[in-house]
Figure 1 (spheres, one colour):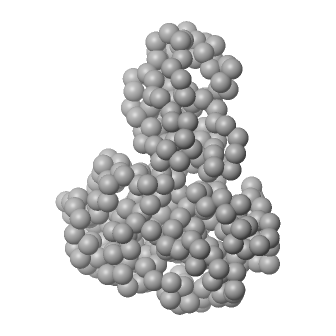
Figure 2 (cartoon, rainbow, N blue to C red):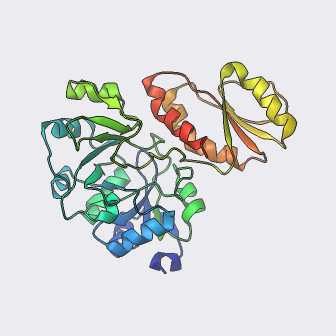
Amino acid sequence: MCAVTQLKMEIGTDIDKAAKLALNGMLVAIPTETVYGLAADITNENALKALYAAKGRPADHPVIVHIGDKSQLFELAENIDEDTHKLMDAFWPGPLTLVFKKKDSVSDMVTGGQDTVAIRMPQHPLALAFLKAVNRGIAAPSANKFGKVSPTKAEHVANDLSREVAYILDGGTCDVGVESTILDLSSSTKQILRPGKITASMLEEVLGYKVELKEKSQVRVPGSLSSHYAPAKPISILSSNNLENGIAQIVSGKRGVSVLSFTKPDAGECHWLEASSDPALYTKDFYSNLRKLDNFDCDTIVIEALPEGQEWTAVKDRLKRAAQS
């Protein structure tokens, strides 16, 4: 049994304590600007095993390595070129993960057995302080059960992993609210493998050439499964034009429905949350709202379809995958 399951979980802001626990092979949760991560030392095989066990994560599903200093990239990755330096200068620290060919020293447990490694430098001040304190790469997938709704608050982690985590470093609510953009630099064709706050146009402005979103790739990355980020209750995505009629049909045959929409529907009994029309605010609140919707006394979750535009791409991706469960 993993040692962390025998500890009483604590929540606080003690960076030194969190770092010492991580260096001793324990699992700790850390805040980032995207979501809370479940942190494990990438040089400690037992810690990595505990990480996968705690999440129920498949062994072939890679994790992202988080670093606290750009110089650490050279210890983990091969083929660091001029484009890499441009991207680091523009977006690190920040919500951009870069995929490289890995150094031989990087464990297959980190990469899911692939010859590539995903790396990022987060922007949250507590995460950076923690990473500087441990002074090594840290695997930090979302601090929740695999395939379920990601955590954007310390309380979300406590609800999901109270028996598995030794310490939760409480950094408040995550500013971005969905996982980082993943850009593949491991081949000659630069492609986005997971959308995030850093959009294609932002990357193109720095790189000077077109970057496309790849729906499917031979390189496995986190968040790429068709069903992911899912609440316990099923989600129906309804267009604005069909929202009220669709809700009425669901209500007529079910105990109840919870709704996330831009305006309150006039469709009988439902639990309603107002969605922000600002894409950044909508995205920041998305996972928290999914958890609230799931906790209502209802059978089905209804979410109004989202507008077009690059600024909506990341959260539309998460919604689509959450509705596939």
